[in-house]
Length: 311
Image (cartoon, rainbow, N blue to C red; front, top):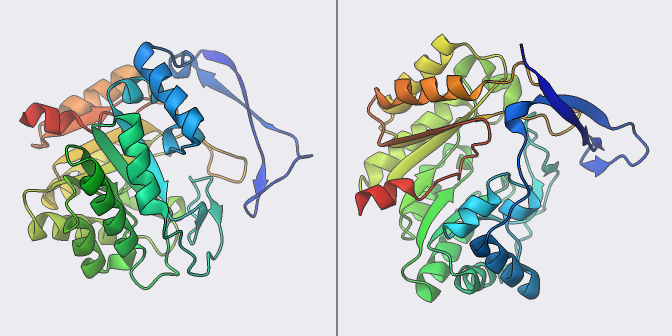
């Protein structure tokens, strides 16, 4: 029996627009999802830099519960190519629309400057889906990685990319930019892929992209993530793990799905921490180099761990 901790209010979004007068969603979450306010010298130092220079990170904008831990460890995540996604996944609160091919060509240099100012050791680059661009935004990813590597050569970079509609040339372009980790999220088990993900995404396509990435450059680590609590069974999780390993993926993470607004899929179940621990142990038996699992885990959480272990 889940013991609720307190009520949480969520904004209501319709067609990507905040509905100010709509009643807030009130959901009760279990005790283990309560988090303390971020603190610590390392976190405070980077927060001051971010504030002073007007920098933007996914960590802050998404109110990630792990922000203090990650920032203190010298890790942060940046979202590229704007805030409008061409897809409409039912788990994600990012606005859906058509960016009409617009790109900020100064973004790569700005992100590299941010990495330098923040003193980051490990950088995660992610983005909205940009199906409006011929290459899905792969060249923009590559330019950003190259800008970071030029300005901060010691920084390690992980690219958490869209599926590029299965276009492997786009995948290869990102890998050739000099990244250490290539990630594309499976998000959920096969049965729940639709309606969880947009119809243009598929379970099989993500696996093909990951397998191709590893085959193209085996020295680059590959990674994927799943959300739990959407109604999946343990048997389905194990099937997903088999499929992921069959694609030669090195790293997998598991976290709790949390409903962003009433327009999104409801949480079917809150997974206790002990069950996440069990899943991690079981997943490691499949031969993954690293498995990170927990209620508050997000895909970039402890992203640098494998490279630390390598050293």
